[in-house]
Length: 429
Image (cartoon, rainbow, N blue to C red; front, side, top):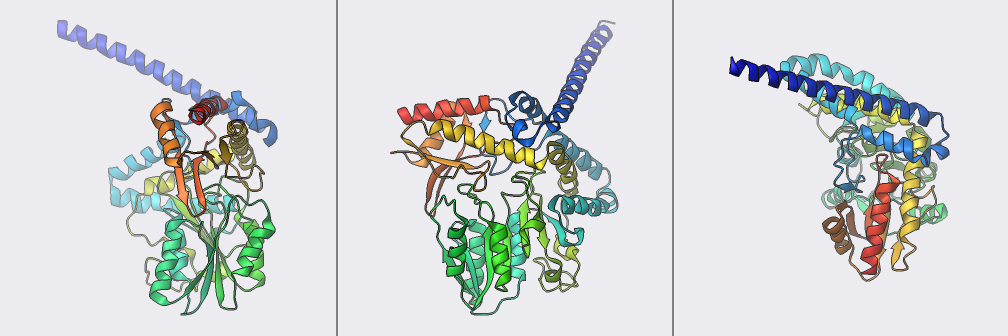
């Protein structure tokens, strides 16, 4: 009898705790929903500075409150609605993998393809779903026909994986890379255009264009570069790992030939999700990275022959798109640029702190970089973490030596005040 009594007491206590937790979760969800409604009543500019609304929106995420993550540029956390979707699809897959994965979840790729195409402003038969920017661009780097002596123009500030891919092709096949080496920041489109044109010869076949550079957050005039390339009969490849769902634009506006991005960055989709766009006229003549029985097919789906993959993260991309659209691309961009400008304007009040990014919205958004006079970037980043629990990343790359800071929509100005104070103390020490 004593054991039974104890059991019922524990059961009642547990039930009560679960009820409270459920009510709490429901209240948070309703508050987030209300905040979204209020956010959409404001213009993007007015919404950007409404700290109360963004603080309520931050409840959508499950980030550790004891760690200030200012390296969202590496990979972004997912809002809880996306995490829950991954769990739901994953558990469903485990009930009977070969049935639920291939017969049920795999059927969700076409509706998802349409959602991604709508987000990018392109046709759904030009969009393929894969795992990251590297995989997307590898299809282009290896799939576009080139012969010995053909040339590609790219910059030394492009992403290392893409640089190494083209270097390997140069080594193996005898193509030639014509290098541009920028001194960043640049807030003049003509300087960028001239650099690409000056590196171009009659043998140039491809311009590799990084839309938003990972090292500093520099935005290049991708649409103008693609237009210039098209005028010259040159193929344009856009690396949009950092720009998609970060700055507000449509792929169609770039008028590029090829485009690849990672959705686990600014879209906040599950880790290991990405997409690629290929202009329809190029699909048939581009070889897929993973072989199929019809490599010269004009069907974009030939680029999705990855073998077995996890369908749970892929299908949960849909929830990430819904979350992004609920905020609004322009509102998101304005908020991210506001956060970057907020900390940049504050830290530079100290004469020892130098920025390595333009504050003009057309040349940067969320990503920003700074350095402290007399200190190595790695030492600044280490002190921020060890002394203040603030996670940033140090950058030492071609013509760049700085600390990169990347807030996201769940970052508040109160968080940034802590960061600003920490940088001031480090600079003063």
